[in-house]
Image (cartoon, rainbow, N blue to C red; front, top):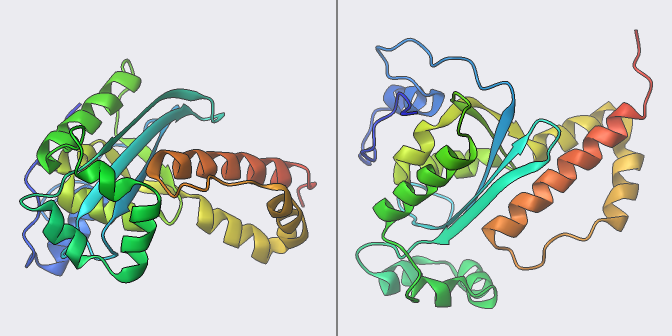
Length: 228
């Protein structure tokens, strides 16, 4: 289902009020989008050349769609060959990012035959979301870790994908921080001692780590009696 945001990336000099409206899923003239679908969560993780959507490139997108109980419906991931020059994109990476993406194989994959032009990648990802959510009306809650980063890159570099998303998110890192402040710090620390995250630092593994993390946080919270 097409969302309220078009498939044209925002210009780099977009006014702040228009960018805020875009990230909410509206324009400055439109009413807010409908409520989020109550049954499904669309989890997305991205890999990028840096932290600024205006100057950095999107390199990888992974999507996992789950039900509310976190059972997986479908997963999809792809690598992007930044346009017009992969080597120029690599040159813009800081040393830490370049070393990380060399070690995890992403730079090699960007040069490989299975990497996609950014617009093609956006089309393929939104097609996967539509397949996994068939029969369900969007927009969908976006799930992930520190998801504001990913949302910003999707808004600028993958607008079709962005259009399927509700402006509200499930940010697992934020939930964990809130629970630590609410007195669950010992339980979370004990869980983290046993938790073995994906070591690859690639998008699909990171999503599945986030889903496992939320499942653990839900279990920790439910074990504590609620205060009337």
